[in-house]
Image (cartoon, rainbow, N blue to C red):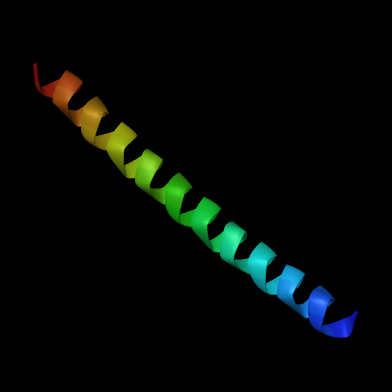
Length: 40
């Protein structure tokens, strides 16, 4: 039971890291698109 709970927490931490990375990527892409639109 304990090891299973540990595995779940590890999985959750991986998911949160991935979500954080994805948000950062989307934000950087949005800012790039915005700068391109402002340049035209």
